[in-house]
Image (cartoon, rainbow, N blue to C red; front, side, top):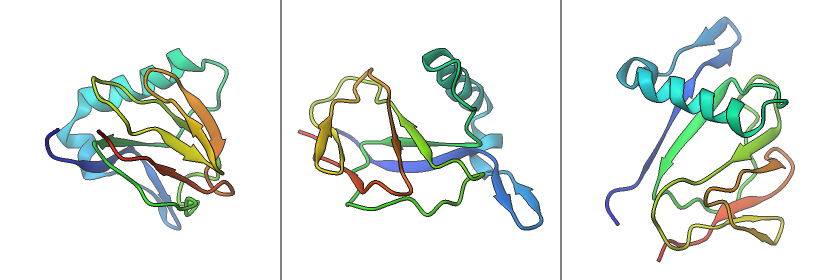
Length: 116
């Protein structure tokens, strides 16, 4: 249970360069740990520019806006002790709890199932 929310860490490319999310300064150790986790999970993957940190966040069906640095291949992994919250990608249920899943977030419709 508990509160839910979502924020981004890393950098957001803009027409004038890149913009740092405020959460970088608020959670510097989390930023470092999130990017280190990505490298540990998939060392051959092109590094992400931005990582979304979600807690108990349930998302409706959508495709991503493409606001990142031209990387459409999304990587998701869920951490923690919870029930539910699986990822649905184009009708396929993905158990992401401690299991990384890659998918094309720009093209493939995806959402989260309810948490129990």
